[in-house]
Length: 171
Image (cartoon, rainbow, N blue to C red; front, side):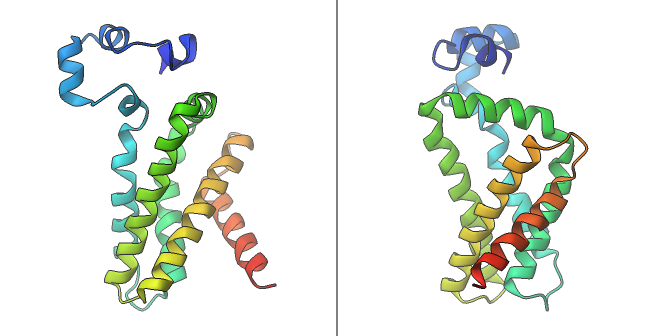
């Protein structure tokens, strides 16, 4: 990430990234399809982690409660990653070519939530709606968390955003 921060994403080359990591370019391409993958590496794991947290929720919990509990647990798991998340967010927001990939990240998270809900017996249309709302809440919570004080717990921010969205929908 240092190279992206220093030179910008567009000006950073794969050979530079490989050299900084002590790899050859060939080895880089064995692990990554392109330089964007360096920024989005962890995004492959997060939807699965949220699904696993949701699966561990009490079987009698309703769809929204299950999603909220799963996201809260995931938030507690990434609390320690605030600084790298903030750095990556800055890089992604500064480079329009990365916006699409960031939207894809949100899409994968929504699909994982939706699939977990339908496996628990939630109506597919309701699962789809809950997943979209959940991802919106998560993304808003990340933004507020990164803009807030360093000791602000992400899961508290998520609960606050979730409640705001729920209250707004009740109008």
